[in-house]
Image 1: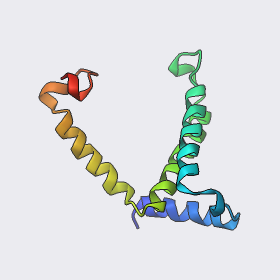
Image 2: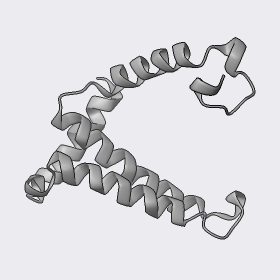
Image 3: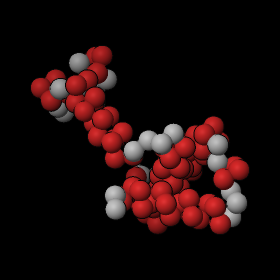
Image 4: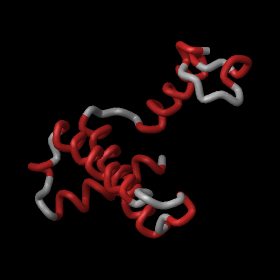
Length: 109
């Protein structure tokens, strides 16, 4: 089984056992991703990156991924495919010969 499908099935089982689907509409899932991403950012606030607590980073990152997977599922999106498609699109926007070693946005290359 595709690991992303396995993850989504586990998340749905967990959610459904708690009757939380009622709270997992696309808008609220998108908001939850943003809130969890802010909690991830907070772990780095006022410190060097290497001083951030790795265990807490794992927890917050898992929350971000979890809500993102659930949102993808709401729209019947294949997580693996949308990421591969985005990599291909980014490859076109950021050709190696222009983008290598620079953080410039594609329209500034």
